Every structure is written in C-alpha cells, then in structure tokens.
Length: 111
Image (cartoon, rainbow, N blue to C red):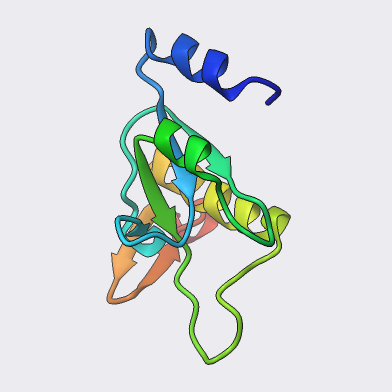
C-alpha cells in the first residue's frame, strides 16, 4: 500500500476493520480467534515490526503465540500465511476450539 492514510480513510466508510499483526501489549492471541466481520490485516517490518503511524491506523492487534526460548519474530510471509489461514477458517465457520489448540474440520471429516 503506497498511501496508508488515504486507504485507511477510504475504509472508514465501509465496515472493514484494520488489524495489525504485531507483538503489542494490547494484541489478542490468534488462537482465540478475535475476529469480527470484514478485516484487513496490516503486517509490520520483519526486523522492527510496525511503526507508530501504522499502529495508529489499526483498530486492534493480533499476535501469533510462539513457544520456546528463541526469537519472537517470524518471517513476514510466514506470519501473514498463518494469520490469513486462521482468518479463512474462522470466516467459513469451520474451526473448533479444543483447549489451546484448534481442530479444523474438513469436509471429509464432517461426512
């Protein structure tokens, strides 16, 4: 997106939430499926995350839970894939929360 301010302003006339994918104190765990309606996701820079201007444009934040003592960062394309995959299954209504894990029911399993 070349001009996030213009794009964000245009989206205020439509019910599209802008959700940042960022390690932030206010971010909600992706595993909890904190989605609402139509959503655009904003990804940060792989090295430094989102800048202040980008963060101000967001209506909320999600984070990808990571376990272990390694880095708290993922490649941006990997992070985007994880978020979009989870959102896709939420939007279809085919996820089922089981403890801290999510089982995705496929059409074959439902038969």
